[in-house]
Length: 210
Image (tube, rainbow, N blue to C red; front, side, top):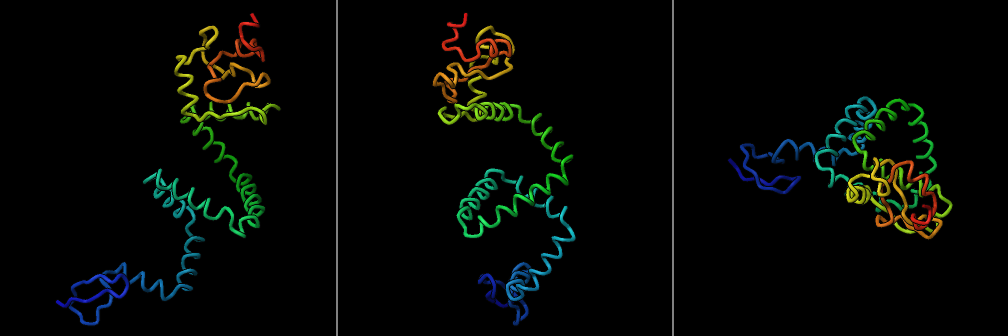
């Protein structure tokens, strides 16, 4: 057995053959890829074209292995290329590509969104709350925001019951209305039933409406 140095990774390894160059099959294949970049690029492109579903499944498995690491990597890539010269040029292309994808896969997207909504009711509630606030003409003046966790903690504080009558939690109420200077901070949000939320409207304080 001879002690040789791998020509790819630089590690020392034991080998019988004097002309051995690599410590493992992985290093041998990696070295070939480096020397034949054009051939590898063509082979990879052909494989991606022939096996799109297999590649998507592999990427989903890799992403699911470590969600935090995968999300951190995605955020890093976003900020890395956000101001890249070609980022503006590709926006129109991506917009058209997304539109085409949504048109071709409308049923799959609808099924996925329904399932996601059932699995994440707290996040759906927070999204609906933000949408209602954005539809208001006072959104430009309204301050603050509430995450799904903050909104759920606020609703849990009141036992998921209407803070006025104690009925079932059906809507998120701005205690101080937006047109009276209220905010979207969690402290200004409380659970309410549909009847009380509609009856209160934009009165401040609520006692003034009774």
